[in-house]
Image 1: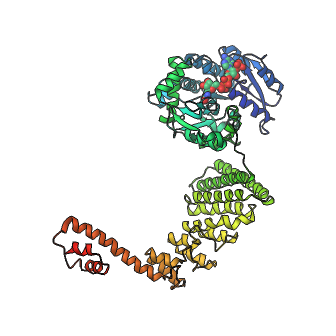
Image 2: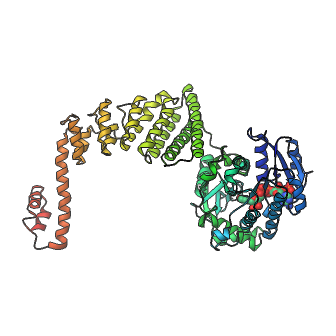
Image 3: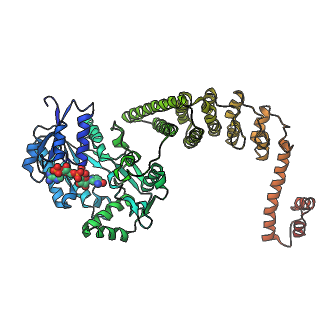
Length: 591
Ligand SMILES: NC(=O)c1ccc[n+]([C@@H]2O[C@H](COP(=O)([O-])OP(=O)(O)OC[C@H]3O[C@@H](n4cnc5c(N)ncnc54)[C@H](OP(=O)(O)O)[C@@H]3O)[C@@H](O)[C@H]2O)c1
């Protein structure tokens, strides 16, 4: 062990400690720098022996006995302290154990103490949720560590994903459908955490010691809502998922169930309030996860990944992803990453570390997409796969462009170049790009249009109604984009499914500005649609429609205010119209 710094991990045989040990033993950045000491009360049990076989120095100590802790910590540079409230469910005892650990860390001269803490819910809720003891006790210990003045970071583990499969999410009456039941609304955000990821967070903490001393470090992959947890289950297990649901358990039912399981009243209160915390104040009081994530280098386990491997779900038939569906997922992640990156860059002062992390993530995803692209190119895709891929690309583009600024669009253009240009099947390119080009036009992104056409997007490609890309530009009043499209050779007189040109559309929509532009661009002014009508016909019809609308409101007005004394002069044109149109009812009304 010489030359290596020692990290002493309490709870070594448990979930959090176990996660730390496996990272410190295997991570290329850590394994040569750190030696791991693991603490247990029983060095002879199988789980302790297994740790010793892996190279952990396993030592015995009890967190109720401070002397044993000082001995266990001797020579440690860093230490991870955790208590297990649930063993005795005694708040006072947990506070004492936490203080023992802190005192021992001080006495042993530990340089970086990491305390597995949690928020004080009583304070966070202004006394509304006073019974979440296992949170409040850890927060009390955190205060004590701060008072002692030892160099420390406070790790705040999120909501264990392992609480969910088989426990909170299981087949339930009356129909035995898989039900995720919690006494909170389906939209409540849950910061999900896989304890096996603990090492990834602690790695970030020890590698960034100076920046993180005295700080809290949130340990969760993401906030997901209870409903999203169910939705992911449905996608993973489509057959069982058909009837899967979220159920907001009424308070009385929740309490009754816990009592029937033998929980004493104070634990029932504790659990109920712990869950209400999610909806009412937020598990972390609404704190975002970004500040911690910017230090984490390794990918965190998602709920989908966790659920796919969770033992209680093992017997359920999984969705089998084809290469095309996996490729679409990779493309989706790439779009998302590019979007995040662009959004972040647009901020006035982007943090360097976060920017680097985002760029690395995007690079990784680009590689992934390219690999899938290669796979897809080599294989003959099934028609169904092609359709799925195409539908996805369209949807993804609609989603991303709809929240895109001009600057972000440039980045998305690069993601598209990667997606369409570097691997996705050639025969899909013009197809996939088609709706994108009209969408890009809609959003007015001239550079995207140029790129798409460069990449081979079909200039004649049409949407469901047969409109070509300039339609999008016209709808969005983007004269520049219209001009660019025409310059790039897009047919300005192309007809839609009813044989209408864009001039027909502009005339019918009463869009004088666009009509003027089309005329400037030299479109065919007398093109005939499928029923032989020229654009002028639509202008006339527009006028009639406008008059019609005016008439309806006039009649309404007359009925309400002027019955018996209509102003003949004002209504003379209405008279004329009514006579011409043979509307005896209107003539009668005006008399
Ligand atoms: N479930 C959640 O969603 C959630 C969320 C956030 C935080 N937490 C907190 O997580 C904590 C539990 O952590 P975990 O899941 O890692 O625990 P765990 O898997 O249940 O394991 C408990 C560990 O604590 C050790 N331990 C217990 N009493 C000890 C003692 N007197 N002296 C020395 N070691 C002792 C055990 O070691 P030996 O048995 O080998 O001695 C074991 O390694 C709880 O306090 C809980 O409040 C839970």
